[in-house]
Image 1 (cartoon, rainbow, N blue to C red):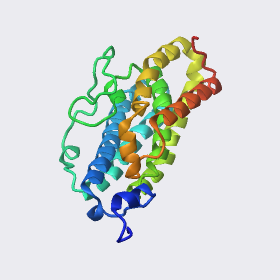
Image 2: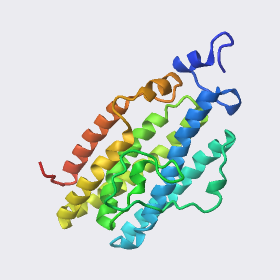
Image 3: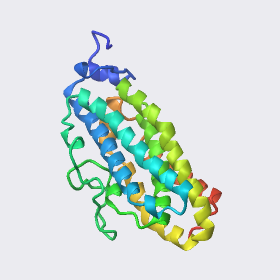
Image 4: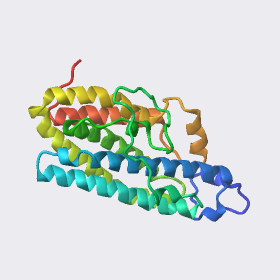
Length: 253
């Protein structure tokens, strides 16, 4: 609950928390809905993409890992979708069919722009090219998701922050599954791994947004952002560099 003499924007800027859609200002409502839609749509698109490569997995353990990712990403989307519905969002497209598996051509270069009829991150508009490619993408995007979820877990809308905190350990596990697969592929298919790294690395990096984002300042005042895009990107780059070394992956200078 806000202080009766304090404007809600000032309350949020000072670290205040909201607990109900009924007392949020319109600008806040719009921004938190945008955040949730991007997360839900990215999870749905990610789930659909991994579903297409389950049968490419080289063995039952890998198939189980891929199936787990497909199931849990859809579950994460459903959890956040419930909160979106409380905000009065139209969730009808999630009830019917939607082309979550639709992808741009592999050679497309769409930057960070939104495409199609949903709010997925641009990286989920690119197709996976087999099992090695899926594992590499999962390692890169998995590390990004963990960093972004740690940020989302601090948002000023308390029920959403709690939801993201519950999702974080499972997304971290998805990233661990990817690294386990990469550890093997680094030795059995090193050239394919390097080619996939070259393809996916810049595309995943774009998901952190512009380094100098004016929008960040607006979101920070609403308690919806705390770390800059540049800070999170730098953490991701350092994390990936360390993980590649740990997995025995060598990259071209």
